[in-house]
Image (cartoon, rainbow, N blue to C red; front, side, top):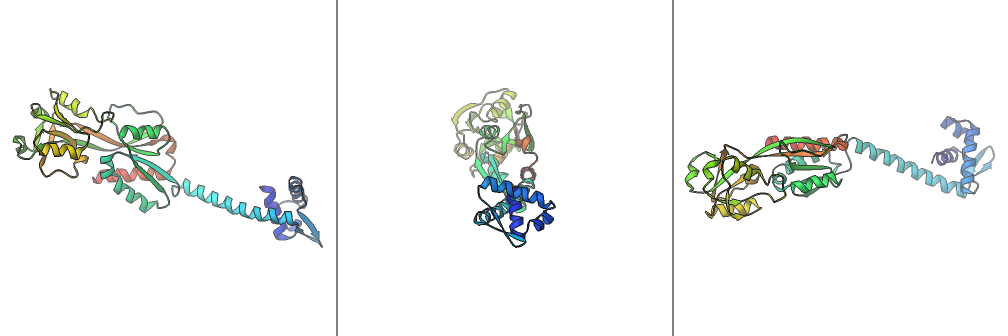
Length: 297
């Protein structure tokens, strides 16, 4: 590459001496560079004309390629600078449904307003699947659920976004609906609609464990892994359930929501990325946008 740039300088100036002056070399060094390139090409690249030189057909060909390579190198350097500054590239983001509805849209809007040159690959995934995507290198940023005592893999950075408490969902007109806050134990004798977020999700044990802490095991009469469907069963009077606040953005008109205590189940939502990505300003900017969205949720 360096020899081709030397050749281009000679052809542009029409003189080995002038090229040497411009590049800060001796004429002898320039001649050696051209001779080495001619040896590689197997063809003469310059011919003398008076006191100067001009390119042969082979010389013109290599000079044209040298010009294109210079442009491509400049473009590559510019692209690397943009990537280093967090203004280019693609971030692969994985999130679960309720976080997607409440946190991701405002965070993405803020991020795009600040870093329009960065593409976002946004895909829905269950919390545990998001962690697997991150560990396998198929995702750059994930939004997931991590409990305070849950170990995290080495080599990742976790940033707490918010604590998402569960609310009791009761049929409208239920006897306990008159109370603003319920002790969880008051629901011990109720029929329950299971509204957990999947058998392998990190939050699957939150409700059963909370009920155990209140001294009972919920009597499940209907199983559902969809919050909207679970609310429908509750509205029909088939039982009660617990649903996290972010999952209650659209409450069914036939239910009432009440806070729960003693104990209060809470899931903790985090944004997670690999330590090796901490240099990337785009990753940090997205994490900060998610933190702001969480504060405003």
